[in-house]
Image (cartoon, rainbow, N blue to C red; front, side, top):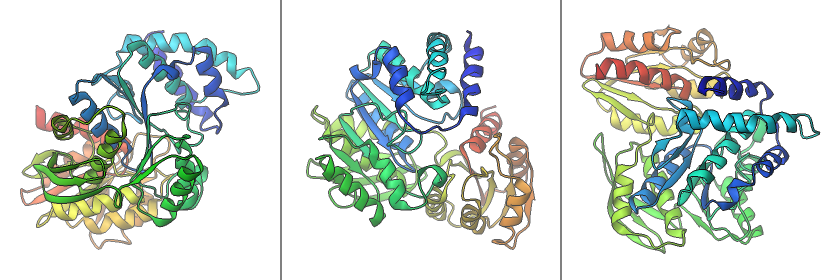
Length: 432
């Protein structure tokens, strides 16, 4: 296989969708020699904030001199973004070699009563095999979907992290906050400490019960871990942090939005629970240097152009709060493209009123994309301004930019698929 053969094979597994159960990944990893067993890991589940929290944690560990593996999903620019060691993505030839090695095992398992391994199971097995080969000091692992039956839930981490809990993937995870929290809490292991940033009482109750049943010490952001925001602007944010393990004043992050301070505090709490001693300077450098593209990412300040991966109700609530602050005094344009299996009505009801300068609905490059004309009709119920449809994302972004003035702002949002294409158009425009 070459790299493109490997991608075609991997993506071809998508048609098998999500098939709950750990039997296939357990068997596949057994055939590979259980590479995950030799890794020191931190496991992160949650509805929003997983990627940013993982980035903060990996950056702090890197600043301490550790070599860190990072497994995240989905990717924003290229498939190789999904697994990295030392801040460097897996190279194409290594990925192709792994796919070629694993494919016969996948085909063999498909003929058994376990059935066809899914796309995410195969990618996860490849990632653990790659990390075992590279031998990083730590591996930060983000779940793909849920937790209890997620393919990553074969590890026994040193710390488990559960970020916020909201309604998403209800057809798979359950139609209530409590049910979804139960799935996320499935990553909690016997005696392994847990940090959670969940805020909703019904989610916290489930997580507390799961931690108690596993005798897992639980640390909650907002009670055991607190933070105070000192300043927030386009230049970044400064906050103070306090826990039983330590106090840090004037920590700085460049990621924008109050929710990112909560993610940073969650990551720091997880770092404090690892066996190695915490280094104050590494905490500060690591948090300040952490980057996570596509999360209130600034492409221009004049006019203000932002890109954000908000794609569910909780994500849009956080984006709304951030935009009210960052774009204060400016009329705001929105370019939005959403997936049809999300809570489209609720998302648009939050987004449309923000578009005080106009709204363009576009179409993500996904078979799951919502019909932009249907989305535009929904948006028209929540704004008195005209709602325009432009299915090509690059054209939508450039159409808005061509008519903007300095006292206006643009935010592109709605799906990681949408912002992935938008980022390419914006890089061409602003880096050329």
